[in-house]
Length: 231
Length: 231
DNA sequence: CACCAGGCTAAATGTGCGCTTAGTCAGCTT
DNA sequence: AAGCTGACTAAGCGCACATTTAGCCTGGTG
View (spheres, each protein chain N blue to C red):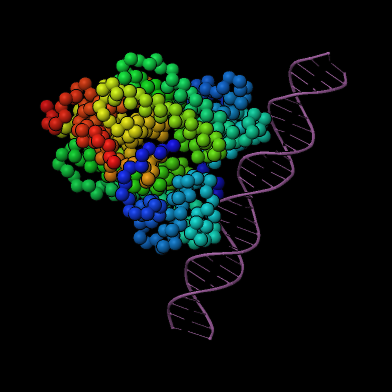
């Protein structure tokens, strides 16, 4: 049996819950209003049920249209997913690049983490789709997204390398530490709720502090921090 | 891509076959060999393509059977998923509970993280299914898994609370810190590869150190108190 | 008013899937 | 040998889905 009626989304249209902040604000300006609404609906559906478990009817009926209407604006359901994921990654990269350089390596890293985490918490529904539905993309689309992801990783990588070079940070294993930071920023999309105790900014602040803790030589740094890299 | 200098991991001898470690070892003993093979095949398929994108034919043909054979051993495709996820969670909980109490709060937490992380790295394919396919479970099954998850969260929670009570740890925000630790342990299933530079045990060691860093006060407070005694 | 374009719908198309059914076959028991 | 059991297969049922098609309707333009 089809199982779980996907939650009675009766929702009519009335007051849109603005709790997802401004999802609709994210989309490309050269998209018409209907297309943007479809993208927003797609985000909600994909986040709630996953790409393969949401139908074109789910997406379109939520904005009062019939399934065929989707193909007026998008070539396929997969193209809807791609545009969502692509936009999400682009926006999160913008947030990363928007920061002023900051002449202090610690402050620079702190600012990066703060913005990265706050953005992900703020847009946790979109970000969840960006993390969980990657494998539903076509191979070429997937590759395109991977390229964007390499950019954000590189940003953090460079920030840590810089701190190490300037001796503001301990001589840590950069790859490991960067992965740990990204894990914090990425995994929050799994559990974050807008009505939880932490605002996006508070969480960003907290995680920035944790991240700095990872690179400042407290504890038994010498034990693990690759003074002599493994052969 | 990942690239990065392949570490000198002396892993068994050959390349592939045992790389998923002993997935088949995980399953319940009262399951026959064919059923266990189907579970193992299911793990691989679900991890690679997701539950909704894998067909019963995918699962069965990988062990040389026809689709109908699945229903000799399982009530439905969803029951295969459930047994995989349930077993994965049960095993990871066992690993958590297997530890000796340890009279030192720091050592206790370190040991917990070490075992938790190492298990997830070791069984990252199963663990990926456990993390990514939860939403494909039927509501009752999902609820059953949530209960198991609350147990592991509680274990970490208690360990941190204990350290704070004993004044081995700083007066941290327990919920936030526990979430961060779980995020590290959980998100590695997204990126970990058996042929990467870190063995499960090395990663466990590293993350245990990061976790202790999170509870050892903020950086400014405890920068110099590296060697042991609390004030 | 005639014409057109494009957003949209209802209906149709075709495919693929989960699961069932009926039957085959090997091995075991008596 | 005959009969039984249970794992397995081939075939098929019913259905849901993504996408297409043909046409409607509205609003703009001469």
